[in-house]
Image 1 (spheres, rainbow, N blue to C red):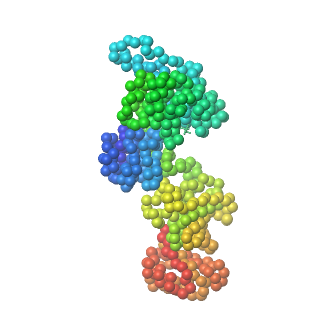
Image 2 (tube, helix red, strand yellow):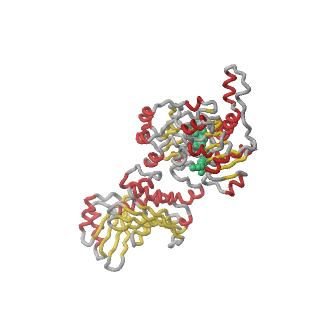
Image 3 (spheres, rainbow, N blue to C red):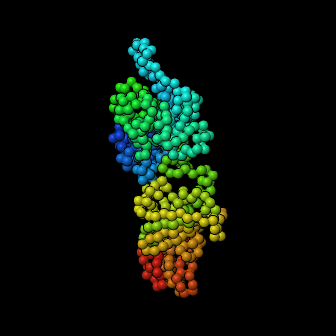
Length: 528
Ligand SMILES: NC(=O)c1ccc[n+]([C@@H]2O[C@H](COP(=O)([O-])OP(=O)(O)OC[C@H]3O[C@@H](n4cnc5c(N)ncnc54)[C@H](O)[C@@H]3O)[C@@H](O)[C@H]2O)c1
Ligand SMILES: O=C(O)[C@H](O)COP(=O)(O)O
């Protein structure tokens, strides 16, 4: 099997060696595609690898009929329409750690260049102007650096700033007093940090909440003569407000690596002598580029060979030890979902999944995803996978509830799925029997022992002499061989069920004839 991989932004050749080494990877590098060309080409590929330049829009994703995975060789995924990817069952992976150090070093380089006006002085000198008066800077020592966003890069920057003997004040929604104390920094609200800082650096992702976080109101509460760095994402600082704040002398310096629109189209800010800038170079080092390319390439190979990834953005990652314990149940969970969809006469409106025994002590989200995949695939087709199963359940208005109980019910672990439909409630429970594989052990209120594979017939009938014989005779006449048969009943002469596993698909005509037999109430063919 060959997987076709398109690399549409420049990636380190050394970094993509996991792809080059793996078998069956056809790598195509085309880094100059226009959005229109990409929309035409994307349909041929199973994987797309990008940096921040390629805009992976909904339109591109909708044309990616074979696309299974998008790899972002870097941190920010704001150039990828995550909602569209999830909806189409495409897993998105990134490289969250590979460029942290480079981005932190670039931030410090920008901070110091800005404070000492190095680019401006160099520019003058290059123009043969020996000017020692215009470029008087300020020291960092004993000044306060305000860090907005103390994640991977923010924390590295804080540590380096302390090395410059700066005081650090940070704001991050996840920053606790304990963590701040451990790092030897102060902390406060955004307003408190903005008020006390001599220098400010932002290190958040670009989100609805952080777009224009630094706006005219924010500049208004800052110290006069504050200097500000953005090596995170264009748009966290409102560029118009920054322009005005520099013009009014509120802001004495700005160091920008990222811009609201990239490549840069509006150069107004760069005309101001207080501004130093680079064209989004934070991650542009040999080391970072190799590292991020290795990380995403390894995840692409792993996805195509084992179905697992380390750094998914739209699918929660599962620790290896947990994966070893729950993976054997994936197939059973999916089959229980598919079984109930076939068994029920109408679509699920609510799904309750009960985990008991050992599974109750574990993170079972991945199992629920597999169950939903099985449940939804019947109606929504092969496009449903574990990436988009929750999304489509929500879209279809299906309420999904997970329940846990440590009661073992005689099994090491038991998964019980109950679906509520317009026509009533149907339930199936399954387990893994030691050394014997998966079993469905309960259907509605009846105990059974059924291997959830192949062609099954579920029959509800009245417990009368001769019914089982008539079913056997009819299937025989239709050339359908019965491999196993289970019967169960509520009480003698009451309602009963038959679960048959048969060797070949029962034709609709045969099912109609079965339904017409005396004492038969209900027949469902189930194919797993
Ligand atoms: N210039 C570059 O080339 C370059 C390189 C790497 C990363 N980046 C960018 O740098 C940013 C940070 O990357 P990272 O790896 O440190 O990410 P991270 O996820 O480790 O850290 C982001 C932090 O921001 C915090 N945050 C979220 N919303 C916030 C808010 N409203 N106020 C304050 N903090 C908030 C989060 O809690 C988190 O701790 C990202 O935008 C990333 O895309 C840029
Ligand atoms: O989010 C990131 O990782 C950085 O912005 C790097 O972007 P780049 O890969 O385009 O350099």
